[in-house]
Each structure stands twice: as structure tokens, then as C-alpha cells.
Image (tube, rainbow, N blue to C red; front, top):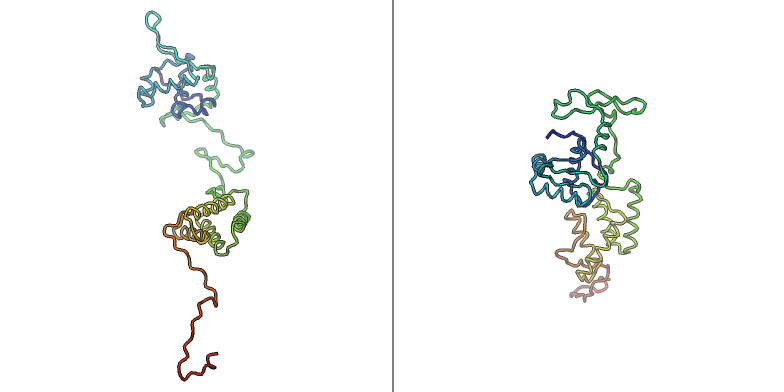
Length: 282
């Protein structure tokens, strides 16, 4: 059997069919290229096994799946006086041999000398005109842009939506935190965590901030913390210390001591030694 042409047809109905694997879609395209001359493909399973370095059962499965999906129709080989090989047709008029031939005629002619690279040539490209390609320079061997495309800092990694300015996003996150709590120490911990995420190039969005406070509430509830706000602060601090971008249950939670209040200590009687004037103590 002659080597098929390099051109094959893969219609959208096959490309986006979730029932087929990627290999089966390529296999279908191979069959279309073999229908160009006769209107059907008469290649054997052994041919396909050698062509794709696949096993017999694999090729059989590909054929079965394509036929079940309604893309091909198979006529078994005939014996006797009317002996002929198996025939594979495009089913349902999806792709016909005439369509393959017509499509092949629309392919640009090959430049001479392309076959020396092991292929069947490279389409000859016409130099772009200055009218339609102001930023392109043609060298004959390659096409390159005069100036590299500049991407705004912080956008290349897809970290921030282009439509939301960073300042606006930070304000929305701060508003989520302030609606969540009015505790100064917890607010400070939340803002520290937001700065930590920003330094990691994974800044919080409004939606991420809402999920964060919701998760913190869940962690404090699961731990049955006597002071939920203190537990949430501990979870935030632990994440920052470990370089995490999410919060988790605190491994060894120890409640923070309450802040000292001036004058709240216990009064103790003072001992006045002999020879000390009590008036000097006031």
C-alpha cells in the first residue's frame, strides 16, 4: 500500500466528541486520508498496527468506537469469486473521499527542496506587505517581530484580573475583613496574612477573602475553641510563619494570655518596717 498523502480531514463533530479518545480522533483522520483515491479505506489492521506502533486489540477498539459513534461504516472482507479486502467508509456523509481530494487542492504548493528534511516540503510563504504588517520584518528564513511584546508587570502569570485594579481589589478585601470582625488584633492578623499572600504573588481577591474568613470560622468551631478569635489569629500566624497561602487547623494551640490592663493587678498589703515614716510612702 502506498504511503497516504500528508493531508487529512478532522471535522469539528469528531474533534469535540467526548466519547472518543485523542488517539481515536487521529485514527479517524488517518482513515479520511486513505479514502482519497477510492472513496473508502481498505487498509488492514496490520497496516495500522505498524503505522501507529499499536497492538491488534487497540486498533480493533478504535474501529469499534468510531463505528459505534456513527462516524465510519465497515464492510467485511469478501471471499470466493468476489474476493475483496475489508472496506471502511465515512458514515453519515461526515467526510467523503471527494471532500478530502477537494480540500487537498486548497493546500499551498510545496516549496522545492523541502523533502530533504524528511517531510514533503514546507508551504512557500509570501512576504508580508508593509501595509498590513507594519510590525513584521521578513528575512526569507524567518519572520520576526520588530519589538518584543511587553506584558504589564504582574499580569503575565495571570495573578490578577486585568479589569480589576490592584488598589480596588485590596480595598474590597479590607472591607470583607472589616465586615467580618471589629476585633483589632484579629483584623491586624488578617491584614498581615493578606500582605503575606501578596508577597507570595498570590494576592487575595474579594471571593478568596470571603472563603478565608469562612474557613477560619469553621476551624475555630471544629476545635471548640473557648476564644474563637484567638484561635483564628493563631491559625493565621501559623500559616504566615510556615509560608503557607492557606489556613489550617492549629497543630499545638495555646490560648494567648489576655492583654495586660494597667492597675488590674491584685493589691497586696505593704509591710512598713520600723523606722520608716508612713507619710514618706505617699
